[in-house]
Length: 271
Image (cartoon, rainbow, N blue to C red; front, side):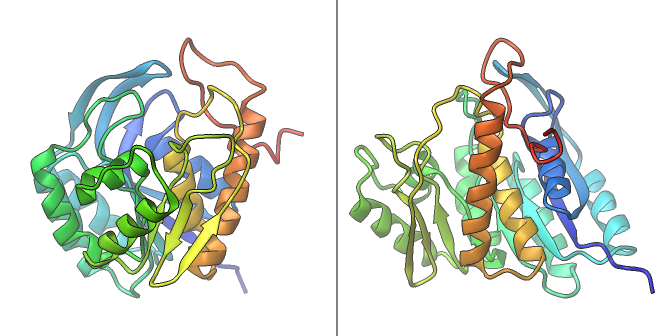
């Protein structure tokens, strides 16, 4: 009897520099012993210093990619990253409703790059919340994205303000919310909050490195991988954060490019 792969589908943009987007997702799935599948929404020209250009793919192209994969291969979890437009949000939401088996959907609310390049028009944010949040098992905004999604201030980000924002986000229909704490102050990431009508706080010491390109993509992909394997959301987040911290720590010992380098996704193999 042949074994079945645990599969995770990423729907996101391509990063030719390999640090974020589809490339980071696929590395993460592989590192966590899952078989990665991909639907590309956009091509980007970017490197460690930033995003120079974005070339969105046609919605028909995304639809054909998705349906071709889904008609042949069972999908155990879905990770969604950069979508880029209101039209793409509608397209992806419609495709997810076609998917058999109701696999968990992890939505990384990509609103802009770490360098400040907008990756979703502000006018598309209400549609993102209306169309995709109700389909998501988990959404993973960072603190600035949480502020944009809720209209709440986050300077300074306190435990109470993060809890208030998470409760407000849950009202939009997602099954759970992870407010990522990487933009918090201090040496600990104590403002990483998972909320599903219960509060789960995760604390870890910050890893001081400039090699952080793709951190958000990697965390959401790792959560998707663990949920594809059947982990609860809480345990998937806990294990994904541990993997991310190890990838950050390993990546901090390497140099790539002139800007913010990537994580080391396959640190376990490069002993």
